[in-house]
Amino acid sequence: MKLGIIGGSGLYEIDGFEFIGEESVETEWGSPSDAYRHYRYKGVEFYFLNRHGRSHGIPPHSVNYRANIAGFEKLDISRIISFTAVGGIKGVKPGDIVISSNAIDHTSGRAHTFYDCGLIHHIDFTEPFCPELRELLINSAENAGVGVIKSGVYICTNGPRLETAAEIKYFEKIGADTVGMTLFPEAPLAREKEICYANVSVITNYAAGTSDAKLTTVEVVETMKAATERIKALVSALPDSYTVNRNCFCKDALEGTKISK
Ligand code: HPA
Image (tube, rainbow, N blue to C red; front, side):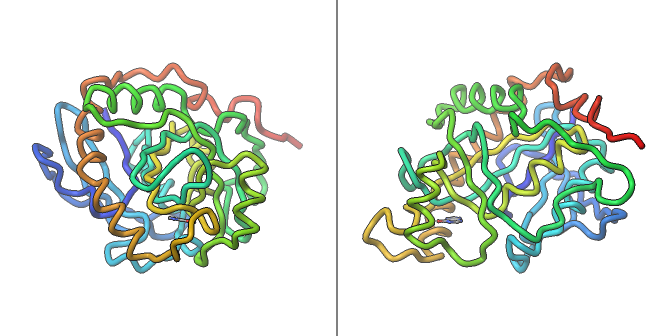
């Protein structure tokens, strides 16, 4: 049983997790952000990847998302849980944890598909997150006594700048609850590889213009740090509800999606 985790290094060193080693992987799409750190806990093999690199030197628009996802595929990982820091637009406050239920792509210029030369697939992305993995997260949070908000629409911007107040007003109007910079193209790339993917977002700040406070990265980092113990408790509870077989649509995501000439 193998599970991929994408997040920051704050998630490493969870009590009871046995560190097995680091796996450096090269892919046809280039190098992933970092080596994958392999841990074992309660019969589950966890592979952690630091999305922004070891020293947090890779900004959201420069992450090699294709290499990161292809690296997980090479390690034979069929499920990925992503952790992200986000601004809260509607119905959430700093410190809240949201299991995202849908998403809007507002990025541009990122290498966003594995199928851009010759072979074309149009994957179904009506539901961007694996329903089974979302359920696993919700059950595990409940078992760990970690309060989570069970749904929310994540809008992904290009960054690295934060948003204008007018942009946030517009994002709220089109249905977004949270705003971050890293869900796209990570989520659809996982789907293109038939890997289950779900997202846990930590609200680190009120989105631009929704409070009087000036947005600072210090606030983002501090709020994320404060949520780390709850996130670790949630991750530690995953093996208790984990099932080996996948019965979701992700595993057959490429079926009937190919354009043949
Ligand atoms: N906007 C975009 N990305 C973010 C934010 C935000 O307010 N907070 C954390 N990541």
